[in-house]
Length: 68
Image (cartoon, rainbow, N blue to C red; front, side, top):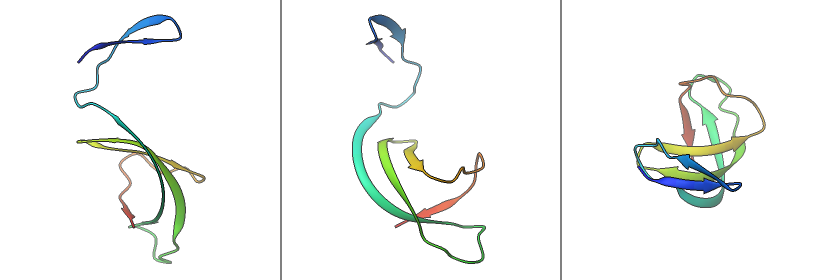
């Protein structure tokens, strides 16, 4: 963990794993959705523990998705 500066303020970074910037357009499906409708999203960043995926429809916390 390291201190970072945002908007002129020092912020203590509490993330366990470093985030890596990435811009990638992806298609995903919700594993609980029987329709298998492909939705679109944008990966903003990623780390060992996950991704930041920007989507147009809210996802429930812990909801499983399949990213293509």
